[in-house]
Amino acid sequence: MAQPITVSHDAATPQLRSNNAWLTIVTTGIMAAIHIWKLPVALPILESELGMSLLASGLLLGIIQFASMVGGLLVAWCGEMAGLRRLIVVGLLLLAVGSLLGSTTTSIELLMLYRGIEGIGFLLCTVLAPALIRRVCTPAQLNVAFSAWGAFQGTATIVGFAVGGLLLEVLSWQLLWIVLAVLTLLLIVPLLRTTDPDPHQATKNLTRNSWHRILKTVRTWRPWVAGLTFASYTLQWMAVMGFLPTVFATANIAPLQAALLSAVVGGVNVIGALIAGRLLSNGIQIRHIVVSTFMAMAITSFLFFAIDWKPTGLGLTGQLICAISFSMIGGTVPAVLTRLAVDLAPPGGSVAAVIGLMQQIFNVGNFFGPALLAWVVTMTGSWNSSWWVTVSFSILGIACTLILTTASKAKK
Image (cartoon, rainbow, N blue to C red):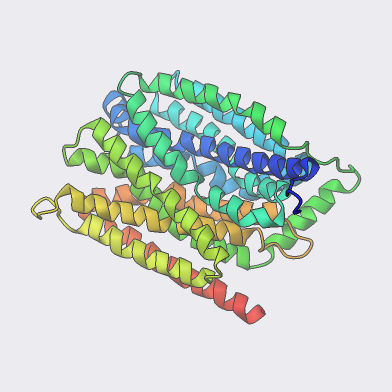
């Protein structure tokens, strides 16, 4: 008689704990990113209340990325020194503090300052989270975990636009900032419960050894090119998503409807990230995934911006289809490049340094993307010219991908 198959409780518990750990870390990234995406849906209100220009709005959208643009490697080094989990908790605290302070001001300058504090918190959470995911995962879990991590921005966009838009129907933007601060603080508890404390490190030569791992990593060229590839994606996605409610508002769409439509566009980015995990598991080459994605982003963004959809039979529906395709297909890039990033550290190097360097480079795109798009629109007097930005950086992304993957094949 066949014996029933049983699962050892002792074997299942570590697996369950590992799953809980990386899911909680991904949730941390989602919460950090929600603080980015709470702003676009409130931007028309802020422009009205504070009298901001379009260029000032672009700077406010990008300022949260400033810390990431200049401090990625510093955070990676601090993570090596102080511990990944410990600094992610600090990041959540800074996000909450920045959001609470932002709710108290009507000054554009102070609002930018407080968004900068949130930016430091976002940096700590998102630079160190992939390294912590790698630490808590088994090798079999990595593709799934990093596909989920690649979807954190898209998931945050859904929440930021949809939930934010609904809440702004009944709450002021200040109360929305406070609610998100409280939720951010509450997330610290499950993070501490599901992840192990940072391993104890001997203090002797710790600074020198940590800095040596950082230097060894940044002296290799592949993380730099991978970061530039990532920046080619983030610049155009951040620019498009940041101003999407404004674009819809110029088409005389009601604020709540514009927020919900933007949530759909941002949310489908998650689908692309999940598809990327399946493609990687099926052995599809990174070169083919990323190049095809950039080509699709160039085509769909051109159609979204360059064509006046009002006189056509499709109208807003046609423009919305283009935006959804742009975001959904584009979602494969962060998932693929994040999975690649954890393997780019040289022997004796630092995974956190790779992520930090890439974050520093692609956040240059996040910082300048909205301002660049706003500048082009201001100079030309029309949103129709915005495709110059997206198509140009899609071409740059393709070139960087070919350089990176060609060198990788030659190395093998």
